[in-house]
Image 1 (cartoon, rainbow, N blue to C red):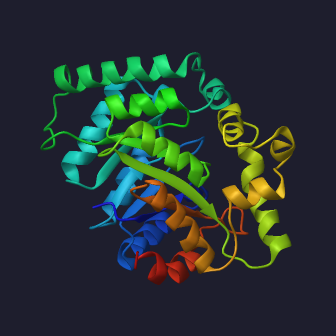
Image 2: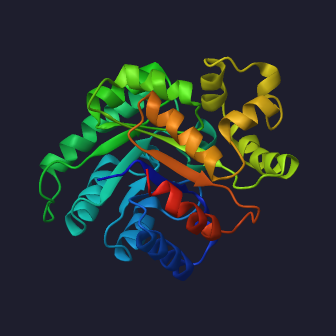
Image 3: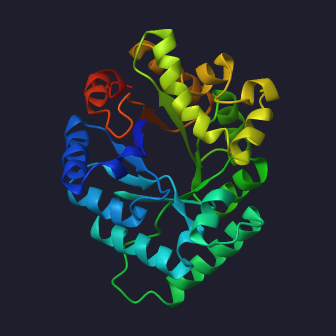
Length: 295
């Protein structure tokens, strides 16, 4: 069971492996059901997932996301199947095409993301069936797609077990549920600042939003939900920042989680931001656990 609330963090790359093991084991002990971790320019995400699975006994580890153009379809299929066989029921593969800027760094060609994802899934399924020679896991293994627009959400409905959305308002969650239909997994990420001073909280939030507002995939999606060029300028208007990264006490976060759940999310993956640029928000994870795990 994934549970209604998971943890999302891209901060693990800034800590040595020993610290990562300690922090992830603590999340498992606290009772969090799912941990999502991403892939940009740090550790290879399937290696990270294996590290995390090795120090947990209950928690599901999910990739949010594994970049398809970072590895060929057989490598992706082999990684998924190997982790799933070794850790039954505790690995969820999230796949995404990522962004042109990040693919350029890898020397990969980002051209027609929908067609690239469709072709990749075809080849991944073929490789898993015809070429994988290790001991397979029992049953079919789940996967979700990183999806924002209607076409990729449609592909997530037709060729995956659902969608993992990122940097989205609750209105997007409602639209995504309509497109996915019933029975498909929908997990939006939700960033949050556990801090009650407006100026300080928004300063931290803008450190987050500023990095994503440079990427057209996100800005184009936000325009669908009424955000204007003025909202998207720089690191974002107050209206945009407060929508994408709410701040305040735990009740504020609970309210936003409820909005996503009421809109059709199965789980909300909470990304707690910390003032330490390279730190892990372990204090906040502990402080939030009683309220989040009561949902």
